[in-house]
Image 1 (cartoon, rainbow, N blue to C red):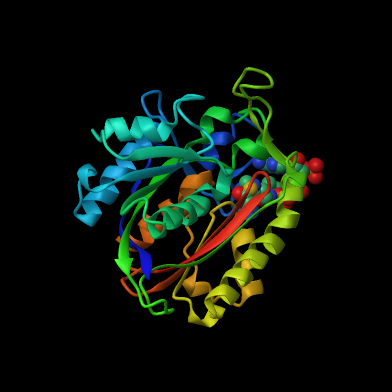
Image 2: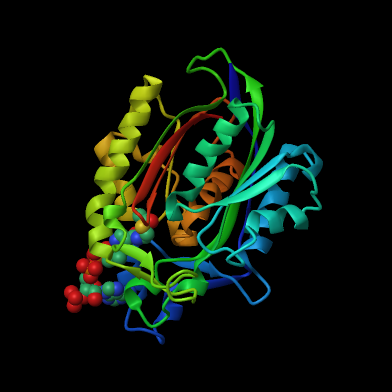
Length: 323
Ligand code: ACO
């Protein structure tokens, strides 16, 4: 059977780093409060010349270099983002053009923080359905542009950045030992749409809007939703937490990550954590964390890796990949 095998990963971060202490003169907060409640110590913030498209392009080029490929080898780009450069055209198409790629096709996906997990599951279906052989899957965000910088309950949580992964069609035996995407489980429920949202848009206010969140409500649902979808993925693949080599969760809050890993029985040393360095970069958080763990040699060929995310909508999902 056809499997979607990981060929390479890459990442890109804005030049400017903003530390927790940098908020102290802007809103009533402290490094201690932010670090204790979230695990975040710093985040990158895009400059005027840095956009979702430019960061996505840089992450894509890094992933291509890591895979030893060029844009000519790619036939589909799927970009997960909630902060596109423009309402349309899709920022994926802009990245396609920046890469000098004038063949194939490209589109954006919008599932907020779950965007990258949705995009990997989608790319896998395009590959297994025979519509694409090599897919560039990107998560790129500039949440700094939709934050209310006077709201301490949200502005300290998010950061900008991009991560990318190249999936390629390969042969598998249909077994758990195969390399590639092995199982996926996606969920959404719009009953929660007002708990984490942006208060503007083309069809309502005609403006971009700003992020609003009931943090406590999100927190309350996060662990249960994350563990449900992971257990569904485990049962699809016929594995348990002990079989995992690495757990790469969405990087929103260290307390959510710890509580989810504990509930699932995933050992602490198998959890990849980058929220301290990047903050919550929404759809970019999982591929940024992946790129870090690949670059430092933790994630290796043959490892069983579980990706997970949950975000606005709510949307949530998990993907199991043999590296
Ligand atoms: N600095 C200092 N005090 C603050 C800050 C801040 N930056 N933000 C809020 N507070 C205050 C609140 O006003 C409140 O004060 P009060 O008691 O006088 O009313 C107090 O701190 C406690 O607020 P809570 O909201 O109860 O704090 P909590 O421990 O829940 O932590 C947080 C807040 C970090 C937002 C947490 O709820 C959380 O992480 N929720 C999940 C949200 C999330 O991660 N969203 C990301 C997108 S969704 C996703 O990706 C999963």
